[in-house]
Image 1 (cartoon, helix red, strand yellow):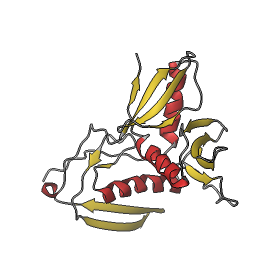
Image 2: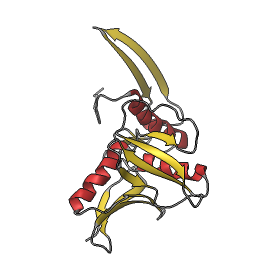
Image 3: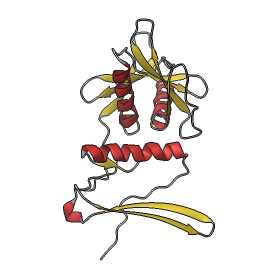
Image 4: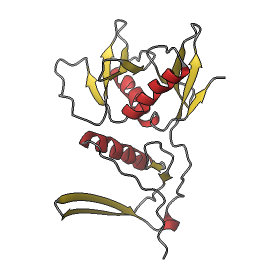
Length: 217
């Protein structure tokens, strides 16, 4: 039987970064949706209701490997898509009334779920801003500023942190703060509860990495 490698990738990631990647797969499996296997979410597989799960730990040549293998008969699962768009949102680049370039992330339901916190002098700089969000959003640590005590942020995985807070109007919001102190994304509006703010934030974490970019003409 001929063996075909449809997709293969590898990179050094922190434990938190690995956790974020596996969590995205887990969420899609639980919802019965196509599972993206790359960060751009262009390669997806659709496992059946039941599949064989093998877990193996090996020690060889001073290295330890943890292998998680999910296997099923081809006729039992859905199609493998290699040029799909699993994200349910789209980045839009546009120029505001002041002539500054901005970006926003719009869900397929029409809602704007994230935008940049500032205008940029050029479309290129706005593009760089949204790319920073795409690269850092999935593994970003979440810090709840409404709590008296905070968990210590874990090292690596992202160069940004989500902050959840209550504004002066008693609305709940989130913002994504880069390690350099810049706010690179925010929710753009207040939510009536912390839970709704977290739901909005999680939608961005799930959809931003693979969202396509469209620029206004």
